[in-house]
Image (cartoon, rainbow, N blue to C red; front, side):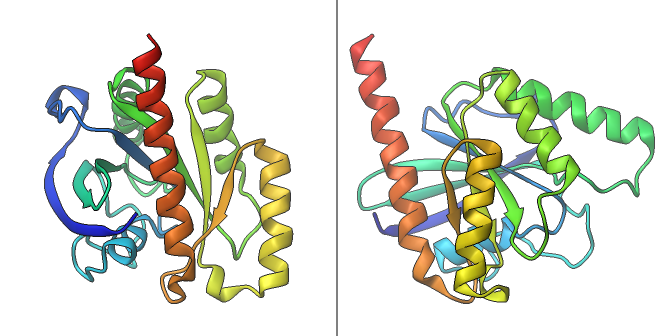
Length: 202
């Protein structure tokens, strides 16, 4: 699956402001500065499609991107990063409420994609996020970012640990070494096809 076109559509603070695009949708989850925006820019081959920042907590809205490929059209929803506390407790609680509502009630959500930084051990808030997704029976797979900072042998070991810990698919990714892009897009494509097949069986 090759991306032909990608564009930013809109931002929304909550589910109520999210239009029904009637397209397969993937939600991007991860700690602040884990590389979600860089992931979007890398797979679409556009340096400035998603805004990147060295300041954690920059993304405070649900940002939607429409991705057109040679096989499918789908949406990416970039969600605010978790694990960053330099906002008021009231604002944190409001973010959590809005994100939970989106994740639990959003139609056409094919899968969540939880990003993990390969340079570090799995963090406590990563585990808590994943446990919440599993508890609510929400589909998820993992992408291990910044793989270019870690040796290939170490990446293989970290992926094995991640798969064992979370009991789901985990894929490596690097913004500098684009050999991983095809594998990620193939997995997304397979999930869309599976969702469509399941709908046809109903």
